[in-house]
Image (cartoon, rainbow, N blue to C red):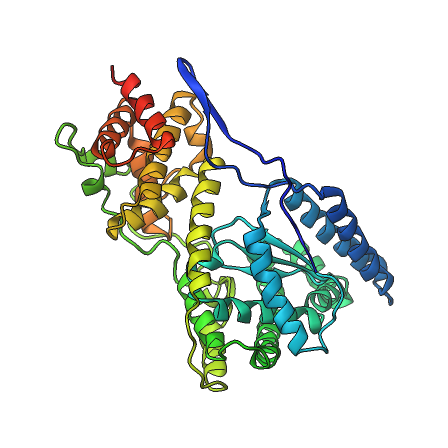
Length: 449
């Protein structure tokens, strides 16, 4: 297995603003590894191998799809989408090793595995012995057993050649005489052309989604067979899917009490900070552009409730938590926060930090990073780029709690951030003595002199 290792020279983030002396942030995550060229060559080798296996009428068209897939992986790799850290590589390498040793029928060739910095709890098999696991999995899963089932599920997709089969089916469908005729008829429709086009899209998409659901069941079933041969507890299979279901129901489910967290004796919370701007029209009911679509059709994990029931009926063991996984969860959370701050995804960073603090956790890390988020908010607002980085709140947003937080952040004026940052730091100045927090405290102190 080729799991990407960190390079020795790490990237660092520097912040500078006018009179404030630039300082190096404690975050130094690796996005481009030392063995960059080796990885790019491996991606090419995987692509060439898959292309050599192609045959049939649509060989050239399928090859184009494979090329797009390769370019997508390379683009993500070069665009700092992936994180390279031995803690993650050792963890997943250990799991894959356990699964393959206990399941020798699985292809024993070298896999290419990436850790994606994204928050959503997803994993992907690209169909060419390349896999991706999102950092968000550590937030939703409870133990190594559950993570191991996700690995088995993705290995099952690879074993069954699901991704490449889906590409083949899609290409054949789009190039069939029947589908081309339907496109022509839709184009010739004088009245209701858009409706005809959407009907065709719906028909095509449902066909693919039905095929996708079947493949998810197959990957669950074979993944469970792989899983049950390992040291892991089988009940973690359906428990893992149960936790992922909560993501499909919404990821930002905590109502953040912003008005209590940012309310100080010397600087009271202003209720208008939470008020949404009036829209041009009076909108009484939410417009849903996808109202004709089944809700399950656009979920990240389709038909998951039935999949959970099916897995649950197949297993009976209890799952035990792993102390090492708990440590990795905490480590991954810090990585998530540092990564969000590094890329100025401040709304997401604020939400995750405030959620923990609202639960009564006021660790030095959480307080320091919330202070840093306030500092970066001040800097981006001063440089007039805050609106470019943080989406505006929307009356159509499904994530209401995140939407409320975005409203708050956009409503704050620079002078408000200056005051909030100062009084927030003052509240913890006697407790936290780290260099990073001290520098941020000094930053806001100078601004308020």
